[in-house]
Amino acid sequence: MAYKWAICPRCNEENFKKLKEMTKAVKAAYGKVSLVEFNKLSKEAEDFKDQLKLLNGVDERFTTLHEVHEQGIHDDEYCVSYRGSCKVCNFKFEYTYSQKV
Ligand SMILES: [Zn+2]
Image (tube, rainbow, N blue to C red):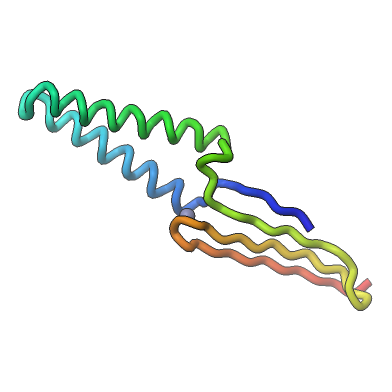
Protein backbone atom coordinates (compact mmCIF):
# COMPACT_ATOMS: atom_id res chain seq x y z
CA MET A 1 0.00 0.00 0.00
CA ALA A 2 1.37 3.37 -0.94
CA TYR A 3 0.19 6.84 -0.14
CA LYS A 4 1.05 9.87 -2.12
CA TRP A 5 -0.01 13.48 -2.30
CA ALA A 6 -0.54 15.11 -5.65
CA ILE A 7 -2.16 18.14 -7.17
CA CYS A 8 -5.87 17.85 -7.64
CA PRO A 9 -6.67 18.46 -11.33
CA ARG A 10 -9.87 20.29 -10.47
CA CYS A 11 -8.20 22.63 -7.97
CA ASN A 12 -5.37 23.24 -10.40
CA GLU A 13 -7.80 24.36 -13.08
CA GLU A 14 -9.65 26.58 -10.61
CA ASN A 15 -6.37 28.15 -9.47
CA PHE A 16 -5.34 29.06 -12.99
CA LYS A 17 -8.77 30.52 -13.67
CA LYS A 18 -8.44 32.58 -10.50
CA LEU A 19 -4.98 33.82 -11.49
CA LYS A 20 -6.29 34.92 -14.88
CA GLU A 21 -9.09 36.86 -13.20
CA MET A 22 -6.72 38.47 -10.71
CA THR A 23 -4.35 39.54 -13.49
CA LYS A 24 -7.30 40.97 -15.43
CA ALA A 25 -8.49 42.84 -12.35
CA VAL A 26 -5.05 44.38 -11.84
CA LYS A 27 -4.97 45.61 -15.45
CA ALA A 28 -8.51 46.97 -15.18
CA ALA A 29 -7.71 48.79 -11.94
CA TYR A 30 -4.74 50.65 -13.39
CA GLY A 31 -5.37 54.36 -13.26
CA LYS A 32 -8.81 53.85 -11.74
CA VAL A 33 -7.93 53.14 -8.14
CA SER A 34 -5.46 54.72 -5.73
CA LEU A 35 -1.82 53.70 -5.99
CA VAL A 36 -2.07 51.98 -2.61
CA GLU A 37 -5.04 49.95 -3.77
CA PHE A 38 -3.38 49.16 -7.10
CA ASN A 39 -0.20 47.98 -5.38
CA LYS A 40 -2.24 45.80 -3.07
CA LEU A 41 -4.07 44.14 -5.97
CA SER A 42 -0.91 43.63 -7.94
CA LYS A 43 0.91 42.14 -4.93
CA GLU A 44 -1.96 39.74 -4.29
CA ALA A 45 -1.78 38.53 -7.89
CA GLU A 46 2.01 38.13 -7.68
CA ASP A 47 1.79 36.18 -4.43
CA PHE A 48 -0.83 33.91 -5.88
CA LYS A 49 1.33 33.32 -8.94
CA ASP A 50 4.24 32.32 -6.69
CA GLN A 51 1.99 29.92 -4.86
CA LEU A 52 1.01 28.29 -8.15
CA LYS A 53 4.66 27.92 -9.09
CA LEU A 54 5.18 26.00 -5.88
CA LEU A 55 2.15 23.89 -6.71
CA ASN A 56 3.62 22.96 -10.06
CA GLY A 57 6.81 21.93 -8.34
CA VAL A 58 4.59 19.70 -6.19
CA ASP A 59 5.38 21.44 -2.96
CA GLU A 60 3.91 19.39 -0.17
CA ARG A 61 2.44 22.41 1.57
CA PHE A 62 0.08 23.01 -1.32
CA THR A 63 -0.83 19.54 -2.47
CA THR A 64 -4.45 18.71 -1.91
CA LEU A 65 -5.00 15.30 -3.42
CA HIS A 66 -4.51 12.25 -1.26
CA GLU A 67 -3.95 9.10 -3.31
CA VAL A 68 -3.94 5.54 -2.09
CA HIS A 69 -2.40 2.90 -4.31
CA GLU A 70 -2.85 -0.78 -3.61
CA GLN A 71 -1.84 -3.84 -5.49
CA GLY A 72 -1.53 -7.48 -4.65
CA ILE A 73 -2.94 -10.94 -5.03
CA HIS A 74 -6.12 -11.79 -3.13
CA ASP A 75 -7.95 -15.11 -3.62
CA ASP A 76 -6.11 -15.92 -6.87
CA GLU A 77 -6.87 -12.53 -8.29
CA TYR A 78 -4.36 -9.86 -9.05
CA CYS A 79 -5.83 -6.51 -8.04
CA VAL A 80 -4.75 -2.94 -8.58
CA SER A 81 -6.62 -0.03 -7.18
CA TYR A 82 -6.13 3.70 -7.00
CA ARG A 83 -8.28 5.94 -4.92
CA GLY A 84 -7.95 9.61 -4.43
CA SER A 85 -9.77 12.45 -2.80
CA CYS A 86 -9.11 16.15 -2.58
CA LYS A 87 -9.24 17.88 0.77
CA VAL A 88 -10.20 21.20 -0.82
CA CYS A 89 -12.91 20.59 -3.42
CA ASN A 90 -13.95 17.01 -2.62
CA PHE A 91 -12.89 15.75 -6.02
CA LYS A 92 -12.79 11.94 -5.88
CA PHE A 93 -11.64 9.23 -8.20
CA GLU A 94 -11.37 5.50 -8.06
CA TYR A 95 -9.85 2.95 -10.38
CA THR A 96 -9.81 -0.79 -9.86
CA TYR A 97 -8.56 -3.59 -12.01
CA SER A 98 -8.44 -7.29 -11.26
CA GLN A 99 -7.45 -10.40 -13.16
CA LYS A 100 -7.42 -14.11 -12.38
CA VAL A 101 -3.95 -15.55 -11.92
ZN1 LIG B 1 -9.42 19.73 -5.47
